[in-house]
Image 1: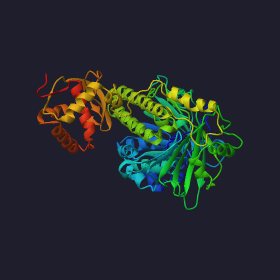
Image 2: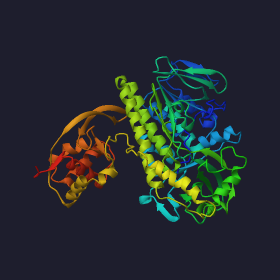
Image 3: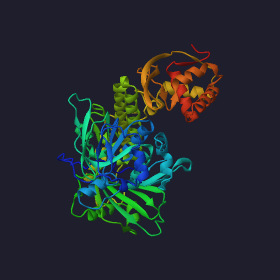
Image 4: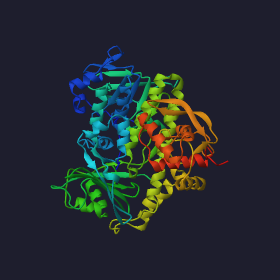
Length: 585
């Protein structure tokens, strides 16, 4: 369960636009030893540099990454592995937006817990971080227990798969160490508001360095990975003002753990005025949060007694009360904003808005860290493309922008489905019908507006899997294939050049033009359609075609494709006339 993104970055006063003078991360606090720090500066001694009290800071890197959270660390690690000179600027308050909120109030730094589902393993592997995270000793995530709309439900992940429950301060540190190991240069400091050059095609970034001194960095590209702070991104931010959300969080400890819930499960519960979650960071410690509409509640960030306000909300729950009542609170409650937003631009003038800097989906999406990592991977691919093949720089930036916009739209659509029909849960005695309408019904109507589809990097512009599942022609072709079919032959095979992610770059490659995808489609449900069309005439039936494709994918070191998905793709090709039964017209 994702509460607040963060991604590291300077504490920006979102009302007035002032930059906080909060310190940024120093190497010892990042967990970087002398050897890791030395590795992080390898190969950069001939670059322009400034002094930061520890040594030289590269002032003309190919890529400057602002923020060292999951998005920043993952992008920096990839770029460094690909031979790109990359500098990461991170500050000293750990653990995302919750920490920044605590720092602004003068409290001790606070760190949020988040749940990473098993599907996060795929993007962790793509960024080279899966082994690092597996070795980090994080609490296993085995599933969810929910009391939603008054109905209880337990969901264990299929096949016994597990994800991770992580404390963001430690998780972020592990990822930064991995970035440094790969050769990224980690710098502590506070970023002044970056300025574009006269032509609007580059950036100058002034940094107040830890240990004294300043540096003006003029990078080839900037990746804004500063989360909600949005050092660059906030000037392009578009707030979803229709349904603001405030998260109020508190940690609890119980010696011996809780016997009434699975120690590896995240807990979620809807109640009259909002919803709540609990994430375990060990068998004996859990974070508990309530999500409310700040316009309806007296629970506001910086309120005099947030702990009392938190307890008043928890009193309206059943499942969460069973966690908090027998446990001891580990400190006071704190609050952070959790409202949704997107960006008007995702790639302005050689800068990319990455992860939560680009957009933030309601925590109900459970997609926070996974979204940040996926965005970081694509940002690294786009920038690497621009550096290696400058003639494709604009194409790469446009590709990144399109996928970021589609990802946010896809999450928004999923939230609409989840919110629709949700109503009171918990005890339901302290809220009025008006409060329920204000939180749930309003969100259902708002989130259902203008959904989009597709979050995979190479997803085509066109109907998504859900829409095609209800397509009568595709369904008829699917059932015909299930009943048995002989050899398939090629029908219409028109192609067009499209930008696609191939390896660690965006390249122009052929894609099929079909009635349902007139703009071109190369990959659908992780299947290479052109490869399927190439193999089809030589296979006796769809089963043999699947085996032939599976063997090809294994030779290319590609992940295996589910048989059901593969047959669905053949059905799509048959419905669009790209493949025809051998005896057909």
